[in-house]
Image 1 (cartoon, rainbow, N blue to C red):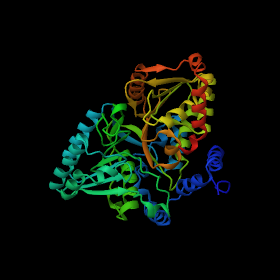
Image 2: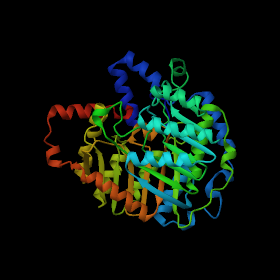
Image 3: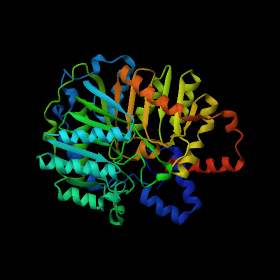
Image 4: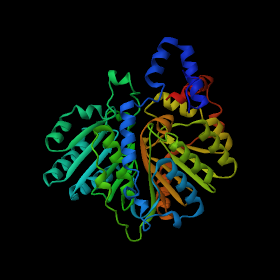
Length: 459
């Protein structure tokens, strides 16, 4: 089965073979459960219907000549934008006002204010929703909005938000008129027909068509109650007004249809006006049901296009071989490459696997910074001083190949400078990994890291 699979990395294939040889019985069970990217025939058919229904220019913001940004981008941005459009079906659009937020309290406060000002609909999609102070405050704001006639729909991942779906808060929100749906339900029966660890990891909010939020922020306080010893969670999000909000809305509409069979396409038919002095931006979505190579292709294009500097922040760094090789190559050709990761990871195995890649990167000149101020959860990239990326996707195999992810490319130097300033604050709160010291770590530590590295394609 492993050898016959198509579209699988050789390293992933080898990891499965090692696992099956080491523990044949248990390994076979694990492979049957999570080895194949099985999405389920019914879901594939449903997704095909929504994709066909969305295959019309009027639902996309870039179909309007007044918003299409292709003609206004420089050559580097144009190459990245064209690839992003090919792999995620959303083109770059002009006229977006974009604000960068780096504080969880401010993100939640801004989101609450936007919900309170909503007039037509509030559509929220999160991987994790906790019934903590943050979840309660936003939940109450949504209940209040429904009393004003606002349609409030919430889509949360069935696994990431499992506790919330059973909570009193969820019941209260539903009783108050908020429609709450669990995305990709997981149970023993479904495991027979589809892979249950394919998760919806997106964080998207769309309000009244024209306003949207996206980034790394879950619906949770920074102290993140399930794992307080790693707190605070340090997140990053963008608030945007303009045509790019329509493309994020399209992703919500797709996901909502996938789990409810309810079409909201009519909400996409109204054009979203450009904002005066707005900037070019491009929303993107990736997932296991289609174009599941889009995330890694977008990442590789960023690395290849870097000429002066490339800065990446991610909480989970378990890269594919292409990413390691291309980052090392970029550093060797003179690009100032920085990788910022948490010093303490909430997953011990992922932390070990992450460090198994350090040697190659450090030898090539990549500067690795381990963040000391909590669990750095922001997923960002800046390319030279020209393009900034804020997304929900980690730099691990799960985000690159399995999860549903979303994010935003911003083709603007001012925004990129702001994002780079934020990244520098993470670097300033980090410890630079010294190559000489790194090479002196114990044999036991090396063995543990390398062993975890062998399994990294499966993490």
